[in-house]
Length: 397
Image (tube, one colour):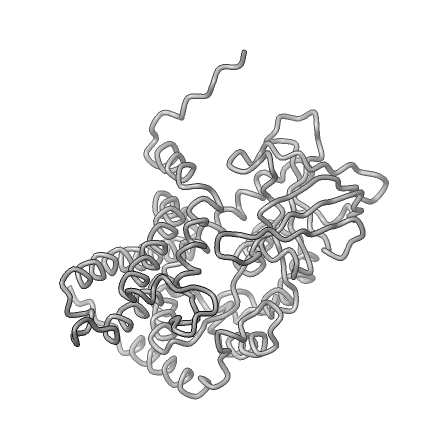
């Protein structure tokens, strides 16, 4: 079997490398990658124009309109990682809402929301979890009562990333209180500037307020800002959750981390010898490399299935569980190979890489729970993928 790339793909790789060499000075530095960064949005515009962001999304919605190609997607990811240059903007809007609207939104919603989201002009947050509805999301209680041509929303959401910076929210609300809990939910889109919305920051173990609580008090939302039909939001929500799990288990991000750790191991020394010469650390790196490559090829399988309109099946079910746990172990190795520098935090003058590995270690530990806990993911794999008996429920008294 010949696993070499054909001349077509070799030429495409050269094209990507040429682009990166030509435009590398336009890429934002770590300090310029905030949600509202103009440098970040300018870089996104360049990537959109050349087909390195939203590559296969339709041109009429602001995408590049290229034909899906798993190998070209892989080459792009590999070359950006090799050059240590950031790819396009990611997040709840681009990675979760946009594919949901392409699948289930109206033409008016696609025209209104997709392009400004792709360019970074419109920032989104996700209104899903509530204090009493996390793993059991369908138990949510935030209500939306139809009054004339508006829904009036009251309730609370929690763990809402980017809520303090977001322009818009896609939000699950209960519109049919008497229906079974999975059938009484609707999926609304509305502005975070709407009167009656209060955002309160939540400090995490990273030392930063990366999440928020969001409170709704008589928030009026136009009735046509609903995705899908009223009471069918659970189906829409699950489409979004599928894309969220893919985002949280992104193999490209894992590959970039692996390459960065290999570089650290070449630079860090013990008794004058680089850490890469230490058999224990090298074995840990190689074991993680095998998992990263497995994720990469699984991602290519999912891309191929998507282009053929096929379900990802088991391959899609494992992404979030495997990806989040792998990212945490990668950050753990990075901290270990930095030795005493790995325990430094915040403003120490000796901290390496601006403390990104320490932050990643703590944040990724939380992501093993967030977006569907590891236990929930294992249940999904066992019940839906392996067709094992469903987890028994506690009998009602």
